[in-house]
Length: 325
Image (cartoon, rainbow, N blue to C red; front, side, top):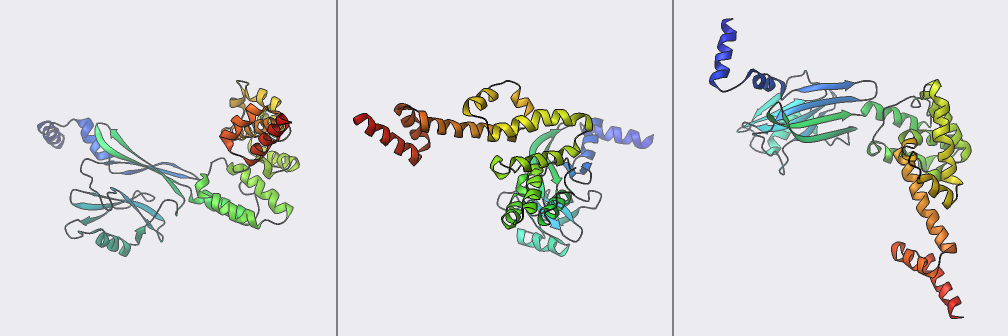
């Protein structure tokens, strides 16, 4: 009771409330938000009132320990450099006196001796969100890190071996920036039909596939494979709502049919964002083709001013010659 009384007296004399005191105990700590077989999500609120630039006006830098597989963030405040482990939040922080390590080169060398080297999140398959936030009245720097390295390894294995069996049931989305270059590299090397079909299934999971990249038969096989992750009771509605209209409108529908379809209010709810974008792009292409074949001179000139395509210029000249005759 005596200790509680003394702490209470100290807080009152310093104008602090129990809420603000508890908030101070919660900041400058990393917490695990989510962790599963595909992704690890970490969050931290760091006090920012006295944050100072470390290098090139940057107030935070990332370092990675390859041996411990740990990402950490370096902050500089109160004349102290502090390295906070993110992937191992229960580990102790590393602190260095700024008066002893006056230059970034010095702190970088000291961290290297501890196994930490500068890194970019792209290198270690991670994505970050940084924002200024108030946490229970305290001005903080919100740092959120999502580690996709496990998921990236699964997709890299599937792409390299042209085998989609290991990723078909995965539901977590992998950001394009972490896999697109790797996928493109192996797509160029694909020779056999089997390899191409497997890559198409993988691309569909990653939302990288364009309509021209697949045949109707391959599309049907892809949809069947992806439907494995959908509950049995939802498969019929999935195929009805997503497969049949989408494939038809990406390959066979006329300009009039596609235009009418996209004007329906429920279409956006039925299709994914990528599917809707692909269809609107195709609609624009069909419109150009229609104007090129059937458009008046005025319509052709208007379209040429927009796209500057040589076939429109040629068509305009043809119509002008006909008009002169």
